[in-house]
Image 1 (tube, helix red, strand yellow):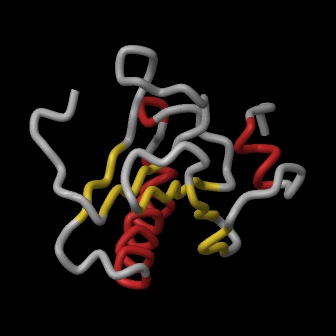
Image 2 (cartoon, one colour):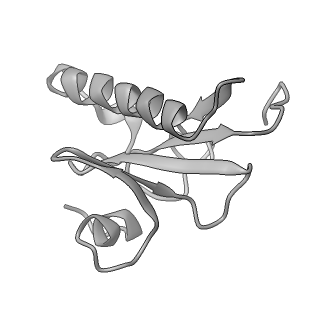
Image 3 (spheres, rainbow, N blue to C red):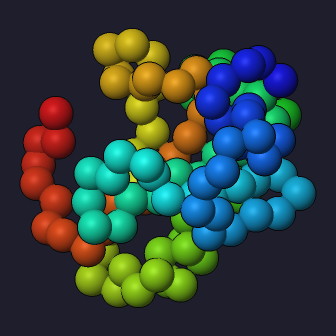
Length: 113
């Protein structure tokens, strides 16, 4: 696993407010929230960004989206929420480990960037 802050979080070397964990994924509250609810969902497998996933990762990617749905229901995002994956420098990715942002409990605007 590459040495990112998320790798350290997965290994429990950096404390975070974990909201979900299973064998292949981890979800925790963002330390710099951009909405009243801002949770990150990450795979435990080291995947630097979306553009490098392969067909081998289909099940994992589907799993991550189902975890997003589960967490959104658990935290009461009944009125909607946004799921964001930043990919690469121009996409705003600041940690080179695939992660999904769940943003909610406020009205989202469009366009986002």
